[in-house]
Length: 112
Image (cartoon, rainbow, N blue to C red):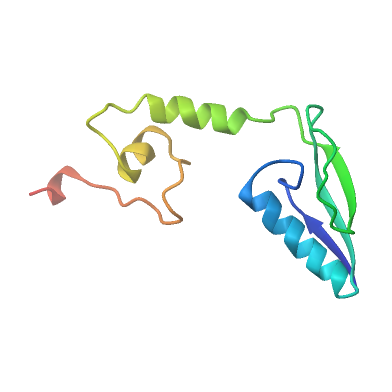
């Protein structure tokens, strides 16, 4: 079977998610599948020593690489020290991660 795995993080990026995709692609190749991995090309990356047997295709990541993490760090830095947790992040930056759940809104009438 021919498979295409699309993964932003793939070795040589040193992240847990990159290793998960590498192990998965290695096992799929081991079981006789033809695996192609579509991932990003970053100029600062060294050549990967992790061999999976998959054909890796690296493409341009886009002009805004790292922009979302920079904006998120600025948004969470603007939260006051007394305000913490997912509700505080949701008030400052609506797309801040809240563990996969939508942050409930708190109205002044529901406070006790």
